[in-house]
Image 1 (cartoon, one colour):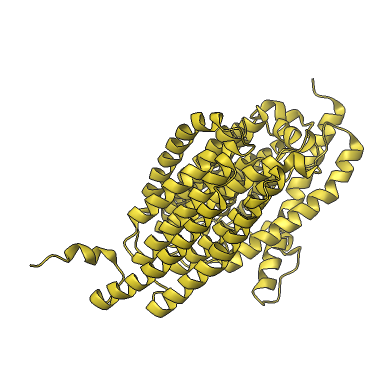
Image 2: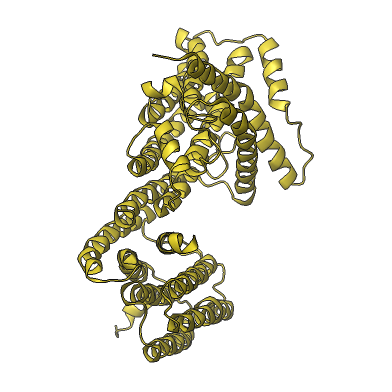
Length: 316
Length: 220
């Protein structure tokens, strides 16, 4: 039975994710520009881009199938649902009973599948090139992400993200060395999944290097706006999963309203710090060759496996 | 408060030690390798200090100081000088396929954990669960020595192995007697110096510090 308070908390959290996601992207871009001695675009620049794209006319290729037009909404829907599963303010979320961490990975995989299909739909060279690269990165990143989530599940004895947060933040503080490994692995996976610098460059349109941008080259107008918004949401979801697993302090337990209100500024501070950290990583590291990506993600997977091993050895 | 989290902190430092061992295993650049080695020494110093404070074993403070002086300051300095003089500072080594080396590393870690489990149940120390990690560090350093072809990373692998052994001694029996520790420290220091001279000889002979040249030493 879904309580009214639970429903309200769930709705607040979803709205917050959808509205805050472009700001997070803007913040990361701003930090990156500052670190690189450039004059930064405003914090709300992603909103302006979205508004502009929504007003623009959609240009479709003649041979575009319905899938091509339908995919942006589906991708956005998947990521919005994923954002609703992750506890950001409180742990009393009705959707959390329906979907656990494994379902979250499934939702992200569904979004990836459709963006890759849409990339190949028109039949241009760049689209299929981007789709292939995306699948290469994806099939290596997914097991690593699952292993990270399994480590956290082993610690808390449940694969539900809400239970994980409750165990880590509201029980007696225990230092988990395995989470150190899992944290490094998760950072590597999120860099790859969000098309960030060591693997992909979000600011490039150079055909030799791009992955994400190559797939969405054919999109325009409101479709492109949905895709861009979904990309921001993806960054937001990954940031929030990272915060929930490794820095869960501040997230309210259950559905008490005072805790949820207090959790909001804590969340904003954590996201701001995380975004600045991401900008720092992107500034100090160089883009890898695409053929180094399997090595990078293989390392992430092995670190996640090590996290499980360390958990078995040290924390029993 | 800190006493309660002490053993957990030791576990965390042990995990970081293992993480650094893997980082060294996958590192291509010699300069970063030396920095990682220094970082490993520093983590070792911290964990020894912590164990000393937790258990009140005063002689461990001496070992910690020795670790700091030797492994964080002296040996990295010697190695930095060495690679500068050898002009291999920016050398990039082509390794075996890194993921497969890492996979072998994982297998070694599982082996070490399994081996250490019955031994650590015999030990009565607060740090006994880290014995598996210490053993894994030793085996990973071995693996690094085997998979590298250049001489300097092999030397670093040898030194990292000593780090692992030292950590094993701390975690199983709260460290060795001071005399033994001084002896080992001196051995490592002298070993590094001798290997340095040896490297110059290799380079003089073959114009490179790639040890694969040594295999061709027989007369044609």
